[in-house]
Length: 340
Ligand code: ASP
Image 1: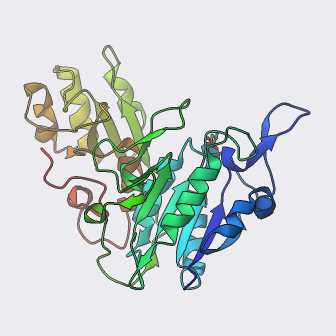
Image 2 (image 1 turned 180 degrees about the horizontal axis):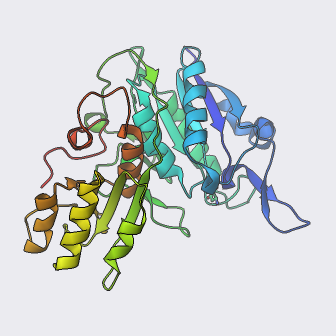
């Protein structure tokens, strides 16, 4: 049976070409992709393309565009067996993370991909990324999708979307998943690690478009003026990116500021500046303040996942429990539940 895959083209380098007048990269009409890449006609799956009306550099992606993608997936969910989202690389991990929370009980593959060089470039990485993503998005066994979660494919690796992060602006091998195993690897064979894949909790696919933007991300650094944090008055969630396994300056000011924020009912989430490993409250005395003020342990989550999870959970009428308890839950494989 020929599987049907929908490509959702949002923008990014993959679909750009050089405007020789200005020398800058600009998006081309992606519906011409079959002419530019005749290899696509050789795929075993049937491919359709839907393009954003105005493709964007991924630095222009945000909640509105994530909601747009979620709606396209929903509208086409019954008609297609899988989805490939073509996206700029700069914020692809944010979109992948956001979608992982928004697409509930996903029973079909969603694969985000992009490229470091435009598809028309002789040395492009776009073709392999796109063709293999289409392969993963159409992978079925016994009439069941092998991948039933939001993933990101780049340079021979299939990663869980909400565990991925862009770490190189230079190399084709641009993404890592430091705290979760690689879901699939493409070499001579296209491999998949079935034990690492997520299984949906139910078969009732639905989308949740709720995203609250009252979230702030703050990286601490030696010598910073911690009082600045109190100046952002409307914020409801602060994600503090602290040192190593969870340490921060051990002084009266830190305690005063954190207590003041908690009094204002601000949720404080603690994640690490290290890309691999995570937070252990209590390991060093310089982390004790977090438990004392009731901060939330972000464990081994990426910044992208912590930010989009906060936007998804904050004031979301879907959930009945409080924010801290919800945040501690593993919703869709974004955190190692028993991490310490
Ligand atoms: N600036 C581009 C984007 O993220 C970079 C890329 O696609 O690789 O849209």
